[in-house]
Image (cartoon, rainbow, N blue to C red):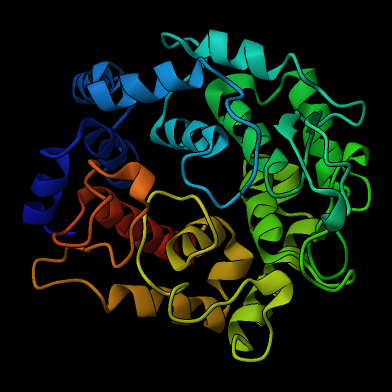
Length: 325
């Protein structure tokens, strides 16, 4: 990265400045510049608004995991930018999350799956593999990675892995519910967010569960015209640049896999990163090609101008590619 681009990133939103200093410039966490950026981030109205909203956890009854307004997606965003358990308001949020733990270990959300989809039609607390890993991931990122409750949930979810990644799995409260796909197919989104969780733990990052999941996802990329299990396509919409990291799209996909040396060595993954890199403008910045309406007002919640947060995400992927070749 040239100095001009670095200057743009560190003079943008405080979460972009903070993560740029830590992740791209390798500045020490205790440095005055990093502490200043983090202080501005914690008190920023945007972050403060998200934390205030999250104190209403768990929010409305879950109807769509893809909805960008779901609280568990907002939880993962504040975890991703670097909010920690001791920051204002976070203990209240984590306390509410920990009130609803399933017998298996994963944390529950209020859901209502209609009878004709295999559910009970009743409001109830339950979990699914398209939400549980994100909650566990967020709690671990907050600084609770070694809490026994987080470890129990993480270990249970990890053991659900199969030869082709992770299935569409739900807790017993949801009855026979399963997404629109073949029972033996992997769920691409569940597989991806399980990799996101496994990356936080050394033994899981190098595990067979991780290797098989990476192979499964890269196979889907290589055969994207023919394979789209559970209706997760890797076509035009998937390949549009989008932030924050919420659903199944190329930036979330590349950001997740770029943490794994096994993936970085694969020509298919290099092809993915190259396809992203080619979308830089003349200044090296990246403009969102798709947007989440729930994030309107954030610099990535529009498609008319470059986003510094999206640009940071791309350069972090590129830096990971250069590391430990």
